[in-house]
Image (tube, rainbow, N blue to C red; front, side, top):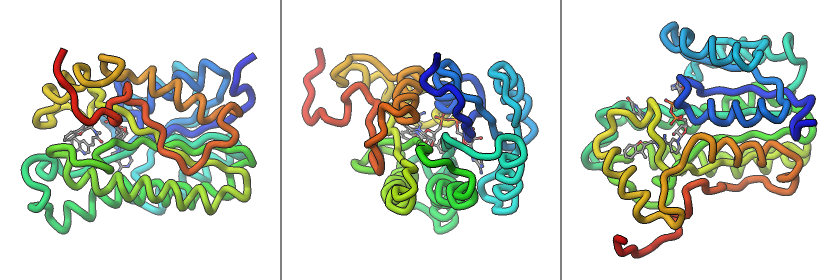
Length: 259
Ligand code: NAD
Ligand code: 0WE
């Protein structure tokens, strides 16, 4: 008996076994959900296929969220394989690396457009294409970061894109609520994933975080997986349009003295 027995989910955003979306997939699978996966590019397909197969995935499809036709093709495949969806996980973000360093005011027009398109609009695009597939009681979860609410040095245009993503969650929740479909974001603390590797100052940020956060530790993809499992289960039946923090309490600390 699993919490998600009989539920069908689509996981977007696994790059490798460090990905937050992979932590979520494992938690949902452990409670009986049947999961399909998307990937972008040949290099990531080689990483994602074995992971997805290890959870018995019947659907492993390419989908670049910058391409509307690819999103429509994906949802056509989801209809063929699963017929409908109860869970949609969106763990996708991208900005040009040069935009994630130095002053925000140097953000380029193209850098702003790209970050917004991939990291914010993509949720709306995917939900729009999936709307007829979503069952009553379905749960949509995206991933965000506190740089949307307060300045995080170097996060820059991604902070602006995450603010748009969190606002999109509220509007999507309002649109889909009448059909008993819930939409929420998880705001995770810094985790060493592919998207965090090579970020200027990430190592120091990660270290400082554990010194300040009430739980005095960093966050794992298992922590995020458990929160996502809750949001996808009936235990969160009254929760929608929310940003749930899985950050060891970090965002509620104003002034901290090092131990
Ligand atoms: P990750 O690199 O493992 O995942 C990012 C995913 O985005 C990859 O699978 C990548 O293929 C996908 N992606 C990028 N461009 C795409 C496109 N055009 N079309 C489709 N997919 C595309 O890193 P992660 O840290 O697991 O990131 C997942 C989510 O979590 C992101 O939204 C990120 O902003 C968010 N997040 C990360 C952290 C952190 O510290 N790692 C903290 C809070 C929130
Ligand atoms: O959302 C993120 C990561 C987003 C991200 C990361 C990259 C790195 C490689 C988006 N696009 C790219 N593009 C690349 O080319 N996080 C929450 C992790 C993160 O990223 C930061 C952080 C934290 C935390 C960037 C600067 C400062 C802090």
